[in-house]
Image (cartoon, rainbow, N blue to C red; front, side, top):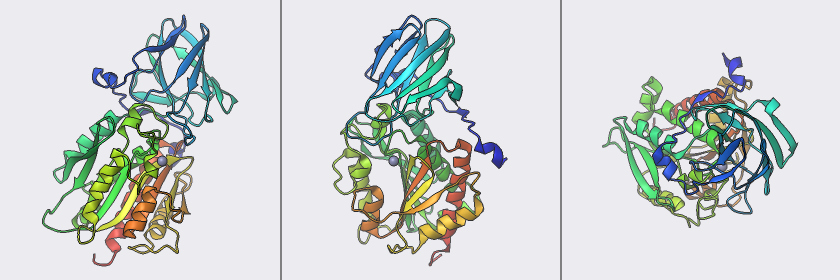
Length: 397
Ligand SMILES: [Zn+2]
């Protein structure tokens, strides 16, 4: 069973949510360009392609630009082809400010996504990638990663909030006035318990981090003996989506203020990070106790940025012990990961801010862009279980 998961299955039931509602959220409703074979459209949430040239009826040049410069090399793209005729079309992705990063995913129904076959992708250079796409009688979506739009976050948040011991609230709004949701575990209201804080999706393209976070949280909320015991001792705050505007606009990295939110923990200049700052006041001197912080992201491979062994945390050595326990259960063939001891560089990241403010383990949970999706979900369950085991072993429990 494990072996099967190593392969790129990438067949997910991910609703794209191209409802009339979500369509209206995007300003650019115009066709980017059209040949005799197809139209190129970017009028849906998460779309990004900036310009388009028609080279011939069957060849289109698409230019993919970032929202700002300079910017991290996370060249997100997403577009829709609406066929005028059945046939094959060549779409050339041209990157002006980055290298190609994400192997294209394709969907003919907006629900099921697959990796575009390798034989249909030609890497001419790091900045020019030729895609051959089969046109049928339906629109076809091409995206850097399978779609994980704001609507998917929000329906997951609603599902989780249906639990009797979870409350949902809005801790603030994005620049474009979208809610930043918080889920809070509130079982045994009258008992004061330490908190675990989980944050996600500061960076729009990082969908594998969002997938891992979903499964991680679900594992904490299951009716298993371990999870029930954990919830009896600990409370949870979950902020699944910090950057809804960036996701909708197909941003590579920033919010609509042109800021990398994970470089704004400290300055807190943006409404999205200010909403977190406000939430954190409950952990000020004499308030609630925060014991662990995890921030979910994606990068080139699976890894965890933690404090170094010489940086004291309370609880002590949590990251080292937690990841060691997981490593003993999770074979490399299924999910290989490393712990990167990353000292506080002074950069205003969530990890550095939380560690320097509270002295607790503050960990960046990074999932590989191309990690098998079933494997990342299985791993997230094990990381969640071992986190619960470890915290339950701490003094006082
Ligand atoms: Zn990130």
